[in-house]
Image (cartoon, rainbow, N blue to C red; front, side, top):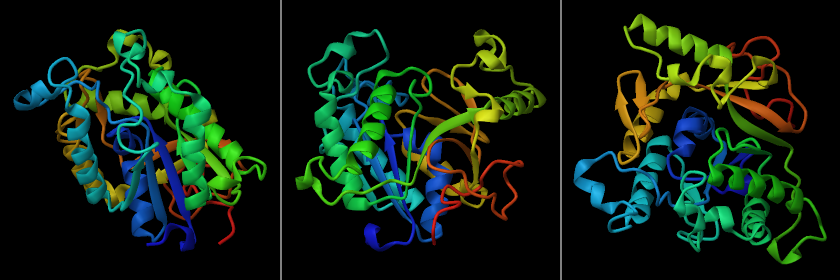
Length: 304
């Protein structure tokens, strides 16, 4: 599908391969199925990720340092599972390197995304925005959800690109100006986290977040009142599950839960949540997945 000719166009800006599936896999699959154009822009190859597959552990950055190339293949398989055909890397594959967790030596590597020239990185993103012309952009909040330097930088790049792309005076060589109507930040409502903890308790499992204190203290959760949208992608949960499994070096899937390399468990949910950072909230649609006041369609309120 030609992204520019589709009636609805969605651009997602993420830091590493697998972030898109964890945060938005059901959303992406839903909009593909509905005929929208979905574009993924990934900022790094995820070279600093841990490797959960013992036979592949020598790919890691402290061994052969070949994990990034391998994860391109994992991302390709995940996108195939979700039905997404338009996926790119910011500035091209390998232009920016995974910076690792905050305060680690990986932050100082020459190509670390955390150290990227922000103006240059924004220009790469503007070129994509002006080509794809999305009505909706999805990325992280200003803390990157949980403080990862690449997530924070992806937020800065995405928000900077949205502003610059609309400015006719900014880099006309990168295409015609485009004004993005709505920007959403991925989020996780505290009420949903509490429900997930209760579900795990019902299965006889301890909360993986117990060491973090009360659920209100879990860094990537937000108060329900700041949530703007709950996108119901439950009919496409099987596609999200397959995409999670495609990221095998980073994610293990066990029944209704998946475990990341830090062993945190999260319910694999077909409903995904968003804060509205730019644009006007639309009317709640007919699907009924969202509580009163929450949209259930990221394109709600937009023409067409």
